Image (cartoon, rainbow, N blue to C red; front, side, top):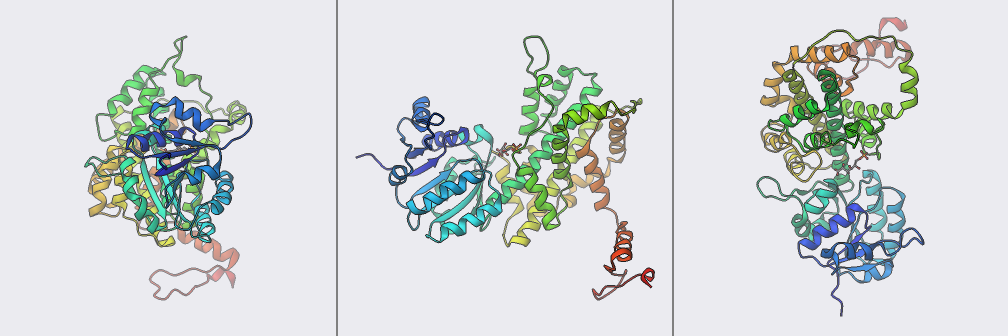
Amino acid sequence: MIEKGAWGIVGMGIMGTSLSRNFISHGFKLSLYNRYVKGKEEKVALEIAQKYGILDKCIVFESLEDFVKSINIPRKLILMLPAGETIDKILQKLKFLLEKGDIIIDGGNSQFKDTERRALFLKENEIQYIGMGVSGGREGALEGPSLMIGGDKRAYETIKKDLKKIAAKDYKGNPCCSFFGSGGAGHYIKMIHNGIEYVEMQLLAEVFELLMNYFKLDFELVQKELESWQNSSSDSYLLRITSIILKYYDSEGSNFVSNILDQASNRGTGAWATISGAAIGSPNSLMTAALHARYTSVMKSKRVEFSKLSNFTKNKSSISLKQLKKIYDLCRWINHHQGFDMINTACKEYNWKTNLATVARIWSEGSIIKSKLMETLSTSFWSSSSIMKMERFRNSMNKSQNDWTQVINYAGNNLIPIPCISTSWNYFLAMTQKFSNANLIQAQRDFFGSHGFILNNQKENSLNHGPWNK
Ligand code: 6PG
């Protein structure tokens, strides 16, 4: 008799395959399923199992019914599928193939509200549902991802031992895997992760363009400079891969990056993060700036057309590399501040109890945004709940005014857009301003719409109107 699978993996794409190899390397028995689409997806699971020796003991399926029967009860299934309709379609089938107490985990980048809707749908048949953010790309899935989990707490108790085995381990050896709350909490945390990721990438792109200008388009010098930043608190996975990428040249001697069309794509998570910040009233202007930088990049033909209409010219200006690095570091702190603040606000809004130190800890290894800074935050959040109040940030920020203005001027004088750097600066100024200009906005709102305002030092929250409406 064939031994049943302890886990079932659905979807043998890059992430599903890598995660399966990870499970097997920890001694789990697996059932693998990939759908059958004539002429397009045939024998996919079988071929994957044959390709990777380590998977040859897995039982493979193209029939969902047989796959489900091959898994130990309570069945534990992980869906590694693209977000959206594909998930709904398979859940329609699984709802009637699975039994009470079985557990389905969505390990894709699903929208957190979709996860909540799906959990209710499956609850009708007493099937437990988990939304699990998985970060780390192919390498993370294979060697240990960062796992952000939300949904049915009882189901988590059943699966956590296994998931902790396959997760990345932090610098103390603890698994980067944690439960963050009911419903879509896991996918929400992953969405914020991706928002922070978008900004981290955009900041590097801005720094790259500034350095290219500084080093007069010499890729080698830019690469060396970024590589040297790794030996400091600026170190991160994204910084490292950027300096690796910049080492590649084509056969004609051109740096490989210069062959790539300058239009950045996205799969939606950055837009969801941006929308969510707006929906819960948590400023996430850096994520918004990074997302819109991608959108602007996509408008290539318009950019080319409009570039002919601008008569701006470059002016002489200077910065030091030390200044640029300092501003890069500070922007990263501000980016993390906005992201973590959003988690705090969302927890209140959706009734989740999430510890920021734990979030930072499980992102400190395995994830795409793992970094020295994240490691620092995983301990600093125990003594301070806000990055703006953290001593290290404050000390560095308070000595940086000249560096900010110099970097911003340098970019302006050289006609280099720096949406995330300049947004960081503006956000910091706004958040440290005792008196804002919002009194005028309130007066305008009242003038044209009688929306009312509260007066300075007013005790009760009743609304007043200005003399203009009389
Ligand atoms: C991760 C990544 C991963 C993926 C995103 C990128 O943590 O492993 O965030 O989930 O890279 O899908 O999203 P975009 O295609 O929107 O850049």
